[in-house]
Length: 79
Image (tube, rainbow, N blue to C red):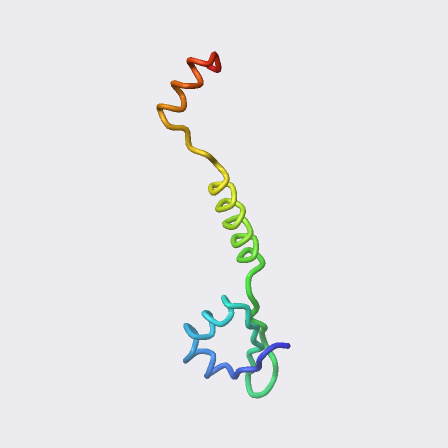
């Protein structure tokens, strides 16, 4: 459910509201009691979090090769 907030309060608390939206909270902004806008988390934010998680998983699963390991592979015929 959307949290309702007046336009003046939204203006004066914008940085705090944006932090809450980033954390997943949604707001309906009203003007004189009438709903005029919904502020919701961006869909791109979810995609960015997903891509970051994938990148971290891939980075964690990669095994760096040392010079000694490469030399061992070369000597074993794996070039």
